[in-house]
Amino acid sequence: MRKDHSKTHLSISTSCHRPIRQFINVCVSFTHSALGSSYLGVKLHDKGICHEIFEQFVSTWRGRINDIQTLLGLLIVRIYDNVQTAACKSVFKEILELFLKHFSLDWILKNDKAGNKMKFLRYRTKLLRKLQSNIYNE
Image (tube, rainbow, N blue to C red; front, side):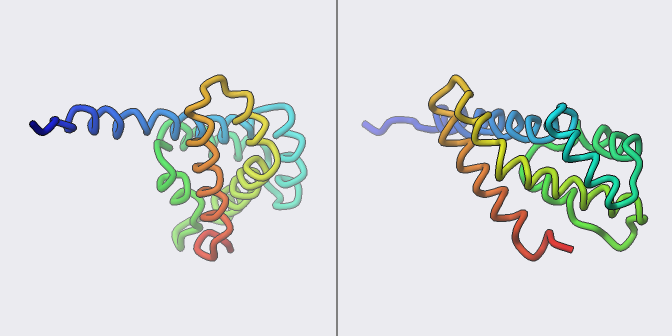
């Protein structure tokens, strides 16, 4: 007799989105942390953006980022973006790349679920690879 794998397959596909959202929320939350804000201040000053404008930019997108494609789509500077939005996207990309390169490993290793560690490491490398591709660079 054949087993019906449709129920287990469905539960796996719906449960894999939760770690992605959790990891993306941690990446976005890094901009609000004390450690992230020290790096953020320098980057904002270099681009000539005030902190409130960047906070508004992040807060408008924070609830809408559900997957990697949405996050990466946010980083593309479009023709209709004004100068401040383009600068905010550039700073957000730089901060996100900084977090992924230097601080995300610490967060992943402190995560208590061993099964999610490998998922987070895969998402980290996938995000880093896509961030460093030519599509998302200015």
